[in-house]
Length: 344
Image 1 (spheres, helix red, strand yellow):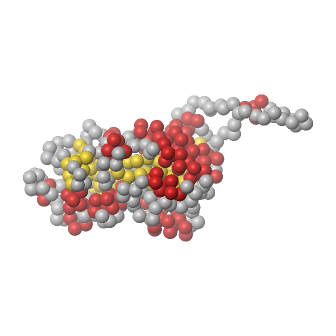
Image 2 (cartoon, helix red, strand yellow; image 1 turned 90 degrees about the vertical axis):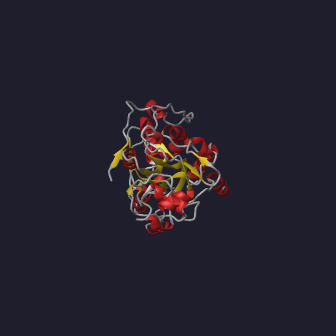
Image 3 (cartoon, helix red, strand yellow; image 1 turned 45 degrees about the horizontal axis):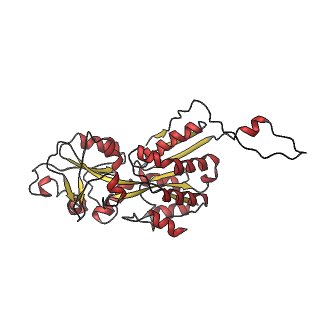
């Protein structure tokens, strides 16, 4: 895994005039420079984790560094599980996650004395995709996807016509998330019914760009990954509509937001180290993320949360509320807004 340093594009500091109270008659008035120039933020913020959340954090980091060029935001891609391993070892300040923290990760953080603040940052969906030359698949049922991906399918369901007889007698080449990815956990929970329950004979990667290229170059491919990566590569891929018992629903911003694209819609998170949160540069970055992030979320192909959710998340951060709102399991179909409101 390679660390990626988010480039700073600012050419100059942003100078903010600070309003100062009138000094007492006996006090020495501050110099003009100290009264008008705020303290410069500096330091390094280490982030790692989900490749799905990476584009959001990268975009936020770029914009943040325009205001604070002396702060270096370094973002890695180890997958959600790999990111939590580093986070719970105290190696990073923030962990990108495409699912809530699992019980084993909760235990690892507790063992090492790492407290964390859980913050939702966007909605995402998992897209099921095929190659554009695939002219036989437009929609698949959840049952068909389970038939393909469940552990018992390994070495058995290897051709398209084994899924539907009218589909061609051609190899079914599978591409999907690696086992350290939160996408893997969520997909298996939503489709197979149990997190991490999956056949193993497929091309796996924690880097969604690898999966995009695999499907784009293979006429007989079927793959899954975050919706943003489909949006970025629509000229190379074809999305499959999902039938969850109520008809075929394609993945889109509208169907994710209105809840009709099920069961493959999900929230995305960042986890902030409680200790790191008190460092001025980290506190400023997280505030910026929750206040300015919604516009950037949409720009990079994800679905912003309702404004009320960002406000509740900011209150959670300001109060330094540690722990998770979940029970150590990947959620399917839970309302983040309801959970945050219940915490108030």
